[in-house]
Length: 224
Image (cartoon, rainbow, N blue to C red):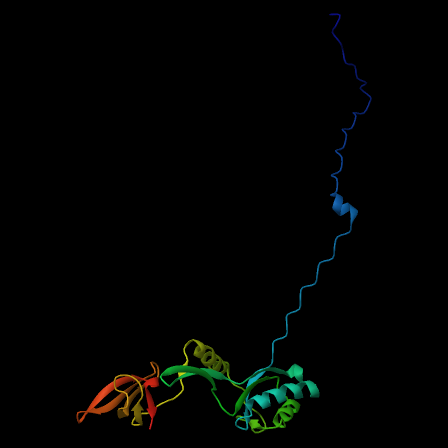
């Protein structure tokens, strides 16, 4: 046997040595240090608005006064939470004055005010008893609200007039008019056709004893 040869002796009666267990996984420092934060409750959905648009009839010329009275009465009598927007629909109109185009505002529905209301019996009586209010449109004991299409039509007309003002005057077929602008100024004639989309008229003007059709802008004529 070589000098440097070694033998490993084992006791056959001894139990084998158990392998060392791996260390447990360490917990993240932030979880070990603080308890889990409670989840935030989901936000509750906002209640759907129950307000609807109604039309109020007023004395002519007092539309703005009625709007102001409704606001002050709503605050004074404690029903301001049931009153939304108050609208007096207006539109831009244009007319010819002294050879110049002049733009101004005009009410679309004189004598009427639109109000957004969360209607009930008490509110109905409070609005009806507002000074210079004669009542609701379409209502005996149950005022009829406007449909969404009717409201959108009014709002669209008001908004679109800012970009394209409407003529201050309207005309009908067979109406007598006088031309105030253009090459046929001071001629008189009769309206033969009205094109409301283009704001133009076809007027029959007598020239050399003959009725001649002339196309004119609304602003170029006036009623006689």
